[in-house]
Amino acid sequence: MSDVESDGRADSEGWGICEERLLERHMEMARIGETPTGGVDRGALSNADTDAHALVMSWFRQSHYRIEVDDVGNLFIIRAGQDPNASPVMTGSHLDSPPNGGRFDGTLGVLAGAEVLASLDRHGVETRRPIELAIWMNEEGSRFSPVTMGSAVRIGRLGLDEALNSVDENGAVFGPQLQRYFEKLGLAPMPRPRLDPAFYVELHIEQGPILENRGVRIGTVSGVQGVRQYRIDVTGKAAHAGTTPMDMRKDAFVAACRIAAGLTAEFADDDGRTRFTIGRMRVLPGAPNTVPEKASFTVDLRHPDPRRLAEYDAKISTVAAREASPCAVAVEPLISLEPVVFNPGICDLITGRARRRGLSVETLLSGATHDAANMATLTKTGMIFIPCRDGVSHHEDEHAKPADMIAGANVLFDVILALAERTDAHAAIAAPALI
Ligand SMILES: [Zn+2]
Image 1 (cartoon, rainbow, N blue to C red):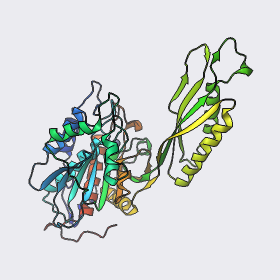
Image 2 (image 1 turned 90 degrees about the horizontal axis):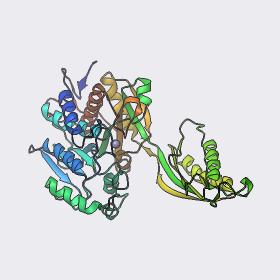
Image 3 (image 1 turned 90 degrees about the vertical axis):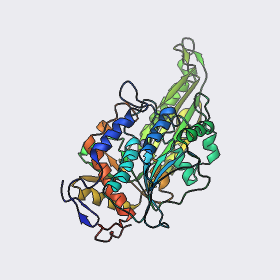
Image 4 (image 1 turned 180 degrees about the horizontal axis):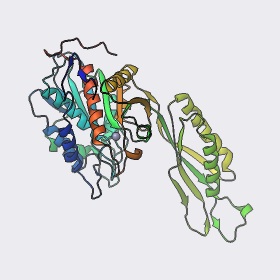
């Protein structure tokens, strides 16, 4: 490792997080809700999800920590700062998972944040700003809709009532499940909004193949691309497969294929940044000897430029109408998320701190959405990515190398410490001007 130093002092080996503890806690966390084949199943507010939150709480019983929960179940571990009026620096991620998910998505960011706090204690470091570890409720949205629920309520993009009334596929309602979670954790939710953080930085696995392919250790995330999802419903006429001549059919599936081909041509990736996917197709009535009456399919479209996404909105309807004849077609928007740009100053800070640790670093855009995308509307925000094997995520095969987990957590440590402004006696040189 090259020239690693803290703010204001060159330090011996071990400056940063505790590597063994990070890996041990990662294995401990992976046992909560573990699946027989190496993944985790921790739907939001399940027993496993609640137990995972309780485990993190159990690590912070010392008197200089406060533990708070808000009215949608976001959990905050707060390390006191020297200045009682300073707005905090926040890091965090989530502990819930999709069904048969991996051990790294979300969990890494929470464990690394916990490491930052505990390691500052170990090094005897005091900071001007408080540091908060946020564990966001229901990031995945796979049990209760929508995705990034906790952070969306926190920033006011989603109403609390909408969250509380969300119902899972077994009929369980979010609100009563949340009460159970509060009781199990022994916490009463705070009624009022918290003090806004001055900065938010989240560590996450990339969930894509770019860093691994390029052999790069650390990703500085410039932003999150925008997302559109639609359902396209094509309606024709059911008919007998043997008796109906081809030129007398209204075959909904054939029309859907024409629309799909037209959209594929329209959204050919001319600038290397468009992502176009048809992930689900349903045909009704679905009998081998019946001409399909209905065909429905989804379109997922992503791009970092909001103007391009607005153009795409119009093109979907144009192509669908052009190719549907003689069938009828309806285009139903499902999801519309605008692109997010992270704070350039935090991006530079991440890049600089990675280089100081001798780590290769590259700037990239996030293909998936994160709680950080919500936080970016509230405060100066950045994200750190580490590579994951074959870019696989939301799957039991999800894997990140221990060395990369450690590297990412150390960069997070350096960045959070720089933003929180060190004040203890060992900080010989004033914290650098930032952001
Ligand atoms: Zn995640």
